[in-house]
Each structure stands twice: as C-alpha cells, then as structure tokens.
Length: 127
Image 1 (cartoon, rainbow, N blue to C red):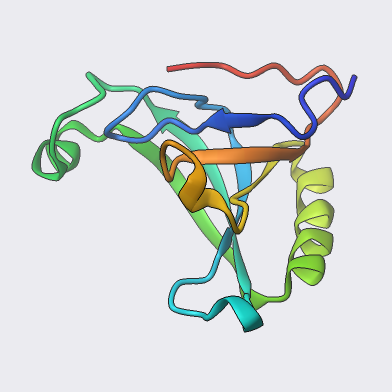
Image 2: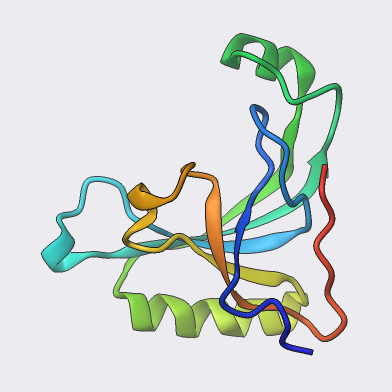
C-alpha cells in the first residue's frame, strides 16, 4: 500500500518525460530565505502529453504539453502547516502528494519530487 512513500520521482513537464498523474505539489515559495522557509501548494490535473517533450518554451506554448488545470491552493505557509493543509486536500481529491524538498538543488532536476502520500492502489503513470 505504501510502497512509494518517500521515493523521489520526476514529474513530467513540457521539457521532460516523467510522472503525469494528477497530484498536489508542495513547493518552497519563491524568494524566501532558508531561515524563514515558506511553502506554496498547487493542485495539478489533466496532463496533456501532446507531442513532447519539446525543446524550448516557444514550442511549449504551441504544443500544450503541460497540466491543463492548475489550482493555487495556498501560499507562504510553514512546512508543517503546508503539509497538514495539503493532506486535507489530497484526502478529499484522492491524488498523490509531492514535496519539493529544501535540498532539491542537489537533485538532478528541479522536476524531482518526494512522494509524501498517495491513495491506496495508486501507481505512477509516465508520459
């Protein structure tokens, strides 16, 4: 049931292949120093595989390879509060919960996320 908890995966984007499941993303808020690290949360649904990955952002706009529905759910929360709020949302929406860890800069790509929680029977889909 919990076989993916704690694993790091690569989320698909316009520029790279990866996991395309609907998900909730908890990521560090932009421009906030490490001492006062805050997090934002987004619900991403309906990944359009299109004809990708593409090679540049100009093609991304023409191609449409990306999540088609992105909802901003919260911003600038401390990590514990962000994860608590995210767990409420993923329990209701039945989607996987990803976390971009503070040490994400050590990952090979900014598209890598840690799986914090997933619904029973969830399996990653790649595209």
